[in-house]
Length: 209
Image (cartoon, rainbow, N blue to C red; front, side):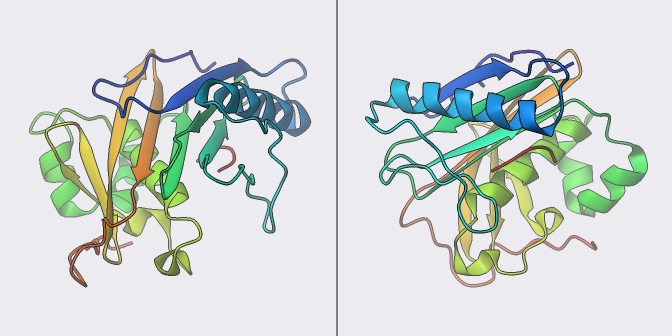
């Protein structure tokens, strides 16, 4: 069961994060409805007069103009985040263990060496969540066409992590508790990097966007 996690340290202050439990029988319909309820609450907290979040083409949630957001869920808990004025938002929650084999596939050599304990301070599930959140925040960009989430690169920053791919970069905040992990990625306008600097050298989630 996914716990309601606290806001990650130093998370962007304008982010509205709301949680909603998934009711029994915990199926896809209940998970989707809980995600929509969390999104409506996050939009209200952000000041949006529009609270409905219909599905766009491809199944992604279509947040109101000026209030970009993201939804994620497990079978027991949903979360939504809205960041007014952002170029893109991605949120992810995970409560399943990331095996060593999965970590080798999702994380490149540098990420495993510098970000995982003991050299780093992150767990495999936190880094998995960070890449999923960044993947969602990249939705709708040119570089998102054909993007696979594990090819997103992660590096440390003073506030947490920075994710990058295809010349775009963004901060990612992560936290975990009782085996569950939460990640939030916020892409701002004008965050392009010089061509090539954002690409991961990797050899190789949960819920909605």
